[in-house]
Length: 321
Image 1 (cartoon, one colour):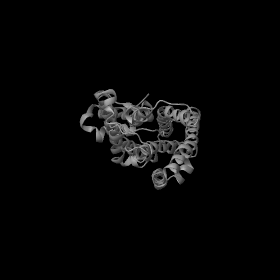
Image 2 (cartoon, helix red, strand yellow):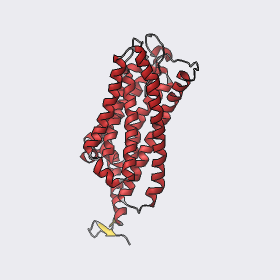
Image 3 (cartoon, one colour):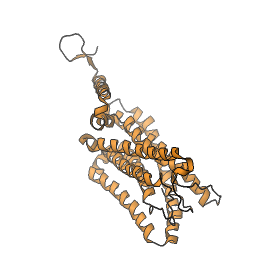
């Protein structure tokens, strides 16, 4: 997703707009984005079992792009920055590219889950780990290739690429994402519901619901800015221009979503939550680790139709009557 092209001049600091509170808000948001995404990123990276699943590779990609978003927000949000072609404070469109990479990662993860649920046998044959990594590398390369083109061609040509080409592409991508959301919801609600209860079915359903929730929140954060771009650039409406990135609520929303996405990840995925509490957050989450271990034990017992033996006979388990 590209930023709306606006005119503006260099200003001293975004903190002067709303006082000290505005600066504190921007710094806190940037710190939250970095902390939460680094935590999830390290949890996946340090867990061999998580790294073996394709869906966690897309989570890694999302977290990496959101980490870059958080770091860059210390400049684009805290300072008085307008990221358009003629601005002296521009970032050469690198900062909005990180937000766009998160968008592409979530779209790719949706397609991955759809393929995995619809054709599990073909999916296991086609989508090896190397091919998944190739998909991720491809959209990262594509994003920065477009950035390079925009910065190398004349400003007039770059403006046309951004305002027309990117706009049309984003319309199709948003439609595809909404269509995949509807299709995945139908699959999770009806198709998987007809399958006999099993651990595999539960894992499929939880992974589908997780990417559904993540995509819905992502669209909710992006659609207001997207509609604003349509209204201002293509209908000809005169729109109010905010002073900078750090005071524009339409551009703050995607950054808030960058902090919310890792929370959705570990709240919606028990395996990731266990890895997070037992590695990255281990020093401060010992009680949470014990609770998760007990929950995991009871889950195994319920699937095996067993219960703990409290008779004092010394045996670990007894058969449930």
